[in-house]
Length: 445
Image (cartoon, rainbow, N blue to C red; front, side, top):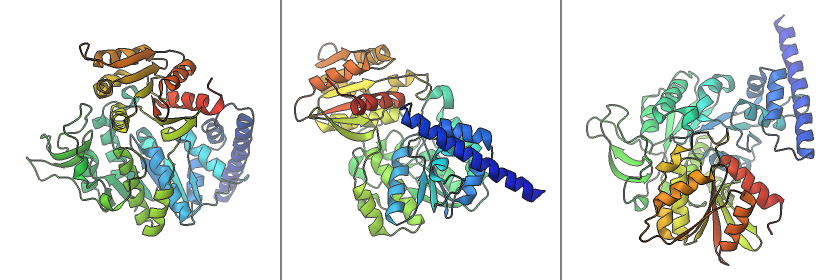
């Protein structure tokens, strides 16, 4: 009986894969989208145990990567390192990180009958579903990058999210290796309490400390006793070198020295992504020279510091979907010396309906620089109001342009970008997809 049930499951898997691949082919042939979610949804309806069945087929193990910011870049970088070492890797590279997106990626990597012939599967997983998915996919490595406020209407505050993540990892009794951000107080504390094998990554570069604590901080109190943490220095948001003056809690020691690794992508936040991927690669036994070669050759993920050339002008797309991420992209913009910026703010389901987070962003630093700021998106007037309040009416030199139509907004921003300079576009997630479609799919006149 058990054997016949297993045979039925495999038959369901084969049918599910065949149908999902057919749907993918149709959607992409008709240019109806990236087909990153729907095929997996259909496949899971036909074969509910699909994720578990695929997980058992991965030869060397599944690497689960989660956290608020940096999942896609870290996943792609680690994939590049492993492939450079000669491994075959399945990966949800489009960033679709809920159950149906994971299923779609695994279906795409399998053959027509559901055979998955890969060494590793790198699965970028939304931090809100880790507790739901962890026992199903049985990861070999759990890598958590950071915890920031993001989409309050979906996730709530960081304390709630950290509690769920802690319980998920603590209750996962396998011999999984856990890799955590030493500079994030909550993750550092979680790692110090775990029974699993734990590695930490972080920065050891005090020359990059911020001059002051930014406005958008989430976890500056000791997770052990509740006392305010004392920071020797802060890199971004609440990430930095800290100790608690009231108890014995302090920052964990990173496994690797970040000063020994090259900064490839722009932005200090991408150095964190690099150190996370490199730490995981070292745990998996990849040689240092291979790792360094792959890091140096890495190209930015789409919309994540991605650079394009449009009508002879450079365009840089910097995904900006929450306070911390947007503050860091603003830092990149202001340090670049370029003077034209396009903000695109959407509030669709994938962005989160609550856009109150824009009031926690230090837009004053962008406005103080002057230049031209164009705003667009379906919450264009909210963004315009935030920027208007950022101006000092007595000394404001910024040229604020409000353009609800995204195509015209991009055209205007390009026109305002001086020759030889770069237009920086700061979009939310769905806005980033819209921007890329316009820039790569049609000519800007």
